[in-house]
Length: 90
Image (cartoon, rainbow, N blue to C red; front, side, top):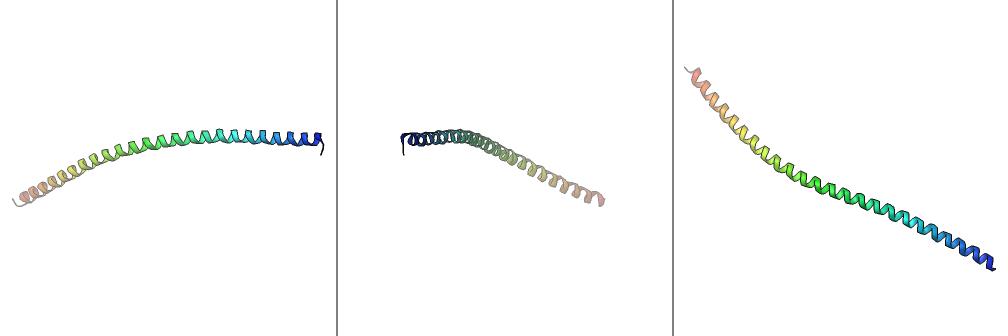
């Protein structure tokens, strides 16, 4: 092998390393974007979890009001039925 052939081979190897380094930079950039997206998703998930806790708390309050209203309705219904019986017997 002469010096020209060795030089050509070394240049090809150097070009391959440049291509490899460029590919690695592209992958690192894409990975950085993926990591940013993942952080944004995690932040969104934390916000949703916080909002869900508030919704659950509000739902418990609403549920207690509905139960109280139902109990009042049942009480009024019983009283009306009792009054209807009394008036029917008159």
